[in-house]
Length: 177
Length: 337
Image 1: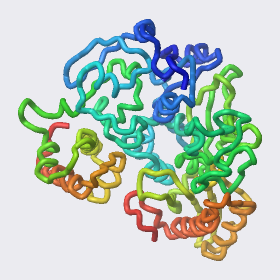
Image 2 (image 1 turned 60 degrees about the horizontal axis):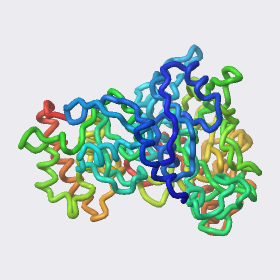
Image 3 (image 1 turned 90 degrees about the vertical axis):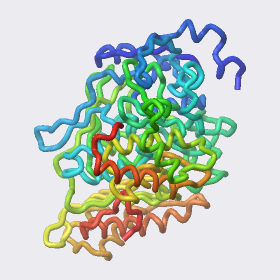
Image 4 (image 1 turned 135 degrees about the vertical axis):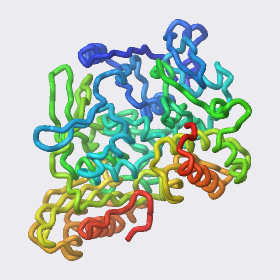
């Protein structure tokens, strides 16, 4: 690959920067972004929100899943510049102060991770799944979580954790996210 | 990713004006284009973000069908109650594709324009006539498990990856476009191309032409349909073979039939002759076998994908049986009954 092409020359980022406004985990931010910056790189490299993970950077693993306007999306495939005005929630934004989100609690309770690298994406994806309201059975959870790969193979426990929270949610529909 | 200029028009006329130069790409959901740009396969010098254009609605048409705006996300389309009830084949095909996250981002127009997932198209170190015309085809002497058995050429054996397009082919949808030469209506059968000696051209869209909507005719075959997708994993994988089957039955006799195949060619594969052969016959295995034979006429394996030919034949029969019995393949329970 030609040098200087895949990594743009110094200064070019600034010359092409486009102003955007994003609300990230409840905080409104004005940002100037180069059009080729992914939401994932913006979160991790500029905003120090490194909870969102870069797995494949290719839309295949789901480790970068965040909620954009309430919908789960792969942050690696979204150019930040296209999201002007959007409301973004990352794994850092799910807890209420020191109180973990019910999905975070359930992942701990069910030991739903080993290395933990995919976990932020799994939990954000599960939050999106719950908001969608399409998963009722265990099979449906598995199918609708198939965009999140876990190389440690914790799928049974991940499914248990989500199933647990879904059950609670039926009895308590006011749960956030 | 290579630098590019960025525009975010809010009107269609403005978008077309911005697209009049060379090296331009329209950007919608980005699930394929952004990936291809990062891989240095797509190298636009100007990107026109069309997400603010007014193309996000699903509307009834005067003829009893639906007009689906090009920017309707795949998930919204799959779960739209009108689509679920009247066009369940489309809903089922959409839910068989990608993941929940990708369906949330991917759009109706973008789904049609996604490019092949041929390994060699993605691998810049190998020749590929689709990526670099005239360089050769590494797939032909490479791993061909996922490649075409129908309609391939000496220059390209790639397949089109969309599930949605296979259902649209069976439903005889039309693609509505606008562009420098005005508005057009393109039948889905004429939208994608076979590779021939220009495999770099996937569709019959003209430069700067924009998909605005897809129209479904009124007949949705909601009583007798199935989308049967066979792949290496149970979820989140492209089809080795998929079948969109749709029947209209009158007293267990076939009055109308549609069969489209995915994963086997450079475009959704149909042959009206195979469908006509079913009309007037009982909806049963004898007829389905005969239709499958006609639909697969001329099929040719590349070696490692020879298995696709008998697999496709059996999948066609099974999908038609599922459609006839009104027991469509479930997108969730993957057991094939």
